[in-house]
Amino acid sequence: MAYGGRNTLTRRTVVQTIGAGGVLALAGCMGDENGETGDDDGSGEDPTVFIDALDSDPGTLDIHTAVRVPEMMCLSPVHERLFTIDHDFEPVPQLATEYESNDDNTEYTIAFEEGVEFHDGTDLTADVAKWNLERAHENSPNAWQFGSLDSIEETGDHELTFHFDEPHPLFTFYLSNVHMGFASREAVEDAGDEYGQETIVGSGPLELEEWARDEEIVYVRNDDYDRGPDFIRNQGPVNFEEYHVRIVPEPTTLLNEVTVGAADASLWVSPSDTGDVEDHDNTDITRVDDAHPHYLVLNVETPPTDELEVREAIAYGVDRDAIITAAVNDEAYPIYSISPHVAVGAMDEETARDVGHEYDPDAARELLDDAGWENDGEGETRERDGEPLELSFFAFEMDPYSSVGEVVQDMLGQIGFDVNLEILESGLLYDRVEGLEHNLLTMALGSGHLAINTLESGFHSDNHNADEGGNNFSMWRNEEFDDRIDSAFIEPDDDEQEEDLLRAQEIILEEVPAVPLLGYRKFYSHKNEISAEGFLEHPWWGDVHRYHTHVLDVDRS
Image 1 (cartoon, rainbow, N blue to C red):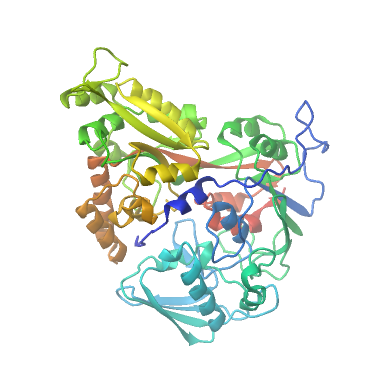
Image 2 (image 1 turned 30 degrees about the vertical axis):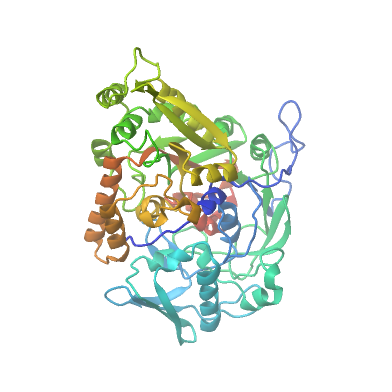
């Protein structure tokens, strides 16, 4: 498949995605001294209700302005889009019935189903669909996914034609994401600026009933729904009369809700608590490796990380397996290229190991010795010309960022770095990064299922200026890298795109503006009587853009 896409996520969007928490609100009971609640069997009270647990309240439920992970999860079952993603990570029609593009992917014509009604009884027609996508193009933080869109034309009562200035080979993939979904135009216009706060109206399997801020979101079943994707067990309606999402920001409370409380399932149990879920008599857990990279950013403009030898020494000095054990309770997997090998368009693990840097503290020490950074004994701070080898290291004030920082600090100290680790609130961290006060920074990026998204958003020189919202915190510029990413974005030939992306990943490994560490693992924790086999068979179930498939498929056995 083709891999295009230009990702211009801002640095403020990054922190919204990685961990903006909600106001503390207890959902269910903490339990007594034995960790038990009033539910003797540890199950929900009403068999017609499914209760999910989420660790953060959404900020908005307006599909065209939302960006955070909790918002995407809560919106996915309410709104339908033209395409969805199948087990092979290929876009397949959801509402679309026929589609075609011209040879260079600068024009797409897409016909969609007739007779689709929103929950308020209004119809999805070409003018409503066009209005929705133009609203997303204008307002969504993910509007970059429209590429070089020039215009949308109504070419039938239920058909749209999209015109682009440049090729956009991945457009149908991006049309599968939540923010490309359709809302009732009448409902949006009636609610005005309040849309997404108390009112949301889609055409999907769930309808919003109530949103009690910081407590619970209640949905009711759309009894007429029958358009679920054919690669899951149930195409609709959902198996429960009501679907509740409880907001449980405190990790221990969330664990108790899943194991002995009212929650039926959750994707948000802390990595440190997964063993408790697995060992409990009431619950089980399913895991999947997610294409979500966590890495060290190295500022190439601030000494001493402006020296390639120093950056390479840092890369050799980090033990990924030890970081995964100490920082995330072994609930991650090591990565050797910035884009995890499970992502589409990523370098394979064997090649990444060969081109990049595996843990070798002796090689790190030799590089520093050759660069003139010397010490008298192992673990002592190195010096050159009387200057100590010091690093300013920032980490977000949240796990696993802070935990990763603490482990890496110790590892680099063992090869002669004096590492000043500061664990900072996100706003202060970004203010300090704008001043280029950092040498090292712990970072993770979403949108990792396509390698080009991670590569462009984190390292393209268009994102160079942090004070302009860029994510290139390494302050690294490389003309060949930029050219390769630009070419991959518009190149319709799969083989040539792959060549561009692989070379771009090689350049990062050679110049070390960042050190890949780990890929996150997603967990589905659930009561024993809960079955979601069709959902969990989908290899990308951890992607919240696909959460509508869970809502349709989940049931009690």
